[in-house]
Length: 341
Image (tube, rainbow, N blue to C red; front, top):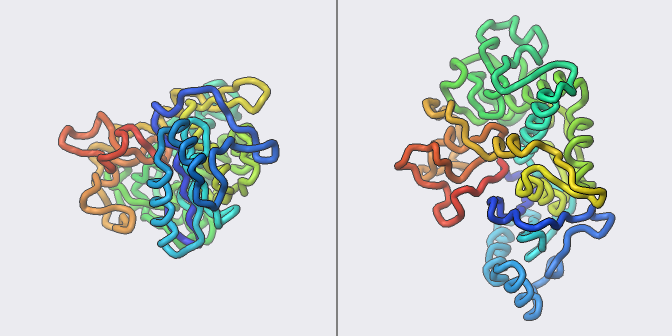
């Protein structure tokens, strides 16, 4: 995620091995997450023991992580959750920006959109391989027939071929006006503008605002009360929420899209679509990286950026479909870890 005014860091151990158990946190107004520690405080000896025995985590190492984050010099927030227990929590942000992690949440909304389409619960059908122009204003593709070759799947995977634009986009009209500079699915270029178009696609296919769609199908059912919702213009970076509510989305992913808010277990997003949020699409194999992918996010030791995207705007640590010689982004964490960005 892009660092701007504040940093919210959530660690809910995004690997399938951490998904065991049936605990689901009630909304914060009804008690919220269960916790083993006091917020913004060095853990006591008893708390350290409880964290180690319950989660297997070393609180001294978690404290080191906080000191590093604190050293960045902005208002910060860190929460670490394992097996549904808060093992560490520092929060000097409150409701803060999640910035580019909003892209991943918009991608989660796209997954739900596909589910509803498959169930014939939308005004129109939509899928990964459909052409995006069917769900965007006619003037967009009329301006350049090459835009009619851009598929819905190309928007969250950053390979639409449109001129990349990450910042300074005042409204969706600027995103719609970007020219084609590459054939689709040939060049990876990190771009907030393509996710804004993705947000417009969701709104068109659902005939709802993105904020209403996301609230109804995702944030409200999981009790994420602090979320300040976004429209298509905000689809790439304008989500705001408390760190505890940010963690709920990771927890939903760990539980394959299922949630129990006290009224019984519900499948909010189909498991196979949740899986797609964490899978690298092989159609990106022959894509090349564009020149503008910021070295702030990627180093020469990382895999090329087009190997990191998933079908829905999440990022992966490793994929079994990568070339055999390619190592994980983070070799010392589980290969199947994934994150928002």
